[in-house]
Length: 286
Image 1 (tube, helix red, strand yellow):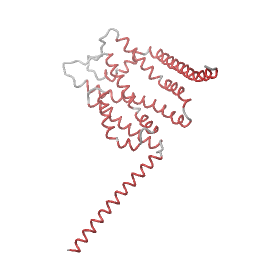
Image 2 (cartoon, helix red, strand yellow):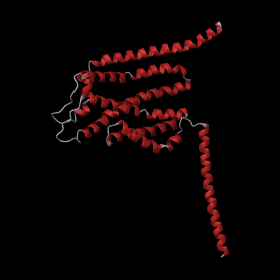
Image 3 (cartoon, one colour):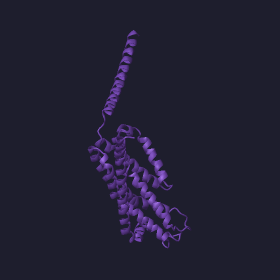
Image 4 (cartoon, one colour):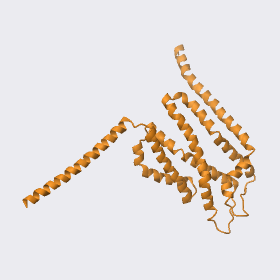
């Protein structure tokens, strides 16, 4: 192998190695910030869990409380909550590191489009969590604590409650990203505004199916997740109309559709005129 070929291979390998080194460095930054936030929140771990359990404990009957069925639950449940809370708090920094890694490979107009998307995705994720805590939890727990038999005391395990709550947090946080996902589909050309509007009925059915799969088996929680999903989908279509310009092919397709519709209308008018003319001729013969 010649020296020139070796030099060319070395030049091709260096960018990959530099990207891997940068990726490792940014991952280290992410882990350090999560660890730092975790250390700052761990002192308030029990207070965080108390605040998280308020929607349920406020509805429990008198004389009942939450319980720990495992010996390690009183420690590991607040520990797990603090770790997840640290990730949630550090989410803007995590997305900033992801943006810093992929930004050099984007064009200038893509950077201008991506920055608002990242900021809005963070806001929508937090909005989904807030919606679940302040709107969904009181309704769900009010329903579950009121439908049980009278001789059964509701005493929820703290680990089971935490897993249930975190599942809904992630579900609503991801669901509230639907406008961003819809806008990206339209912007990338994978879908069009007209095509998404035509599939609205399927989307509504899919929202209720996902609501059934991601939430507990009751109509209230299913509807509380499905209806925001549908409204957020409509919001994504509106954003697509505002921020994404239709391509030339889409404009030509809309023009062809309008011409076909007008031709059909003209054919219908001609057909009606011919029928009237034939009827008038028959009347004259009679």
